[in-house]
Structures are given as structure tokens and as C-alpha cells.
Length: 441
Ligand code: SF4
Ligand code: SF4
Image 1 (cartoon, rainbow, N blue to C red):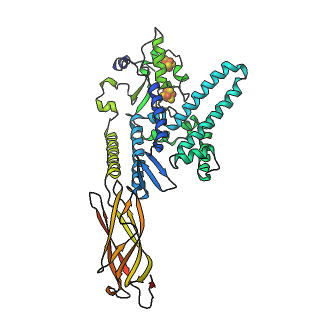
Image 2 (image 1 turned 135 degrees about the vertical axis):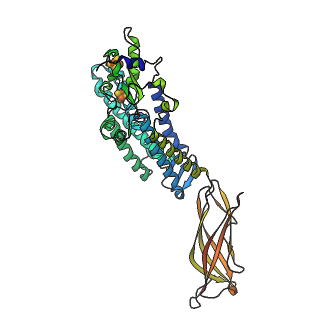
Image 3 (image 1 turned 180 degrees about the horizontal axis):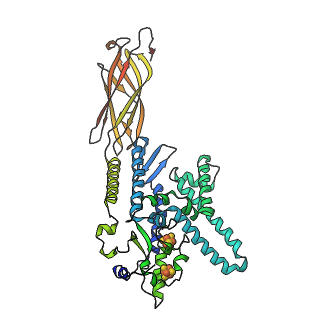
């Protein structure tokens, strides 16, 4: 490849190379901690046994499934946007599969070093057994963390130590641990190379402005052919064979390795021979980019995706923290009795509290002269965003009723909080024909 001296002047070596490895590890540790903590503090959890879910500490029922839709849609669009702008950044820095592979590889290297130094020629088999045992422990712990997203943490951890105590949790735990264990022992980076659909998606959405790890061919004469960039690469590829290789996960380890080795050699040129840059255009000078280009906002496609993310976020925010209308439904139970000159009819009333806080409600009924409503307790308290079904009784004086008639009536629910929200629902108060005897109450 011919060396273009003009390009060398256009893209000078960086004054101070930023070390990426500690930043990557920090991101991975933060992600690991976040994944463990989120279900424990109820910031993201779905309790399959109780049909409820939690977001940011608030509890919701199945009626608020739209919130889960927003979270899934936001996750998908954010991932799409980040991939278009920052390329394989997700793979190398955030992806749990890479996190597990890095952990497994690093543990293996350390165990090998310790055993080789202490056991002599017989170190290999013992090191392998220990490593595999630790990987299986990690698989069980990871599976337990996954299960805490769907079952209470106490149930999950009791099942880890007493597998026969809860068959349902234990069976899910065993299946997930089996899958993760197989991944850790035999798959790891092979999945990134051959099985990951995200890599395929990236090759479709990436373009000339997507961030990529690039070897500066225009400075090829500066390379001292030390091979460090290949040695440290977790995917065992050579970045000098071209940017945008399918296997490259954008971890930046080769950048650090090259930046470390070059300054050690007196005759060698300055660092910056491998870099992270938007696109492959060698004429693009990092120092001359405007602030939006530095953030990766190069064209209308990227602005459009930012707009979609913003819209979804606004939708999620208003759904999450805004007030929703309280919903009530009423179903006659079919039980009709007569006593003391009154006809009594039982109904099941369901209240879905739309308020983002616990609310008390009172009930009333209208439609028939001197009719009245009663239920156990004077008020009905419903948890925030929750629902409650109560059995209520409507009664009306027999002298005001005609046999065989259906009377349209309204049941009204009024909240006792500051907004005094009132909701009414229509139903029928039915008096059977004379031939159908009323039960005595
Ligand atoms: S080529 Fe560099 S950025 Fe790509 S996977 Fe290897 S070390 Fe990471
Ligand atoms: S680490 Fe840098 S100097 Fe060494 S072979 Fe790779 S690109 Fe060349």
C-alpha cells in the first residue's frame, strides 16, 4: 500500500493516547453490578407468580403492559441507534456474552499461571478441572441472577441451596444454568464469530459514518511489525487485515497495545497507528469535526433515530408518571334474594386504580327510587396502578319494582384523594317474572 504523506499531515498522531482497557473494564463491571441490582431494588422485575411487574420501584399489573412495550421498544431503538453510530461498541463494551467470555478467559490465564508455577509439568489437568468447576459455579450464580427477574430473590436463592424446596424455580434455574454453563465451557467467542445475529444486523445498518477500529494504512511505514495488536486481540484477528472484519468486536485492546509498545522503542514513531474513528475516510480529521460530528450525529438517519428515541422516552415517561383514568367494570353474580320488603342483588365490581399512588374509593348507586348499595367496609382501598374486585349488594324496595322488569342503574366510584375522580358504570337490576320465585333472604 503506497504511503500518502499528505494524509500523515492531515491526521497527526494524538498528543496523549487515552487508555481504553480500564474504561472498558469499568463499563463491564458497572453493567454486571447493574444487572444484579436492578431486580433486587425492583427497578426492573416481572413476578410471573403474581402477575405483576415493577419498573423504577413502582408496581404495575397486567393492565399496564404498555410500559413493558415502551421498555422493549426503547431498548431496541437505542441499540439500533448506538450500533449505527458507534458500531461494535455494544459487542466489546457492554454485551453480557463478551463480559462472560472476558471473565472466563482472564480466569483461565490466571489459574494457568498459578498452577504452572506451583505444580510443574502436571499443572495442565488440575488447572483445567478447577477452571471448569469455577465456570459451573459462575453459571449457577448467573442463572440465579436471571431468575431474580422473574421470581422473588429469596425463593431463588433458597432453591439454589435446597433444589427440592421449590420445583418450579429449581427447574427453571437448572435449565438456565445448563445453557449458560454450556456457553461458558464450550461456546463463548464462537458465538460472537458465527452465531450472533447482532453482528449480521450491524453489517446491514453500518455505513461510511459508523465508528470503527481502523489501522492507519497511510502510516504503514510506522508499524514495527511487533504483532502485539494480534496477541492481545480476544478474537484472534489482525486489524491490519482491514477494518470492519466481522469478528472484530470493537474492544480497542489492539489500540492500547500499539499505543503502549510504540513509545517504548526509541526509534519508533508516535502512537496512534490504530484508532477509533467515524468511517474509513483517511482525509477525515478528528480535530476538525464539529461537536455534533464528534458525538456521531453525521446525517439525517442518525437525527431521525434520535427523534424516535426521544418520542419513545416521552411516551414512556408520561405513561409511567402520568395519571391514568380509573377503570371500573361490574358483573351481576346472578344471586337475587328478597327479604324485609326489599330485593337484593349481588354484583362483582372491579376497580383498576389509574393513579400513580394508593387511593381510597367510595361507592354509590342510582336509578331506582330509594335504592341503596352496601359492601364490607365503607371505603375500598386500591394500591397504586393496582386493581381490586369486591362483592357488592344493591337493594331496592319491592314496592318500587315491577316483576319481570330490567331497571338500568348506575354505580358510581369516587376517589377520596385530592382530584375527587368520579367514574360511573351502567348495569341492570333485574326482577324475575312472578313464575320465577325469589329466594327468601
Ligand atoms: S481487532 Fe482490535 S478492536 Fe477488534 S476485536 Fe481485536 S483487539 Fe478488539
Ligand atoms: S501493535 Fe502497532 S506496531 Fe505492532 S504490529 Fe500492531 S500495528 Fe504494528
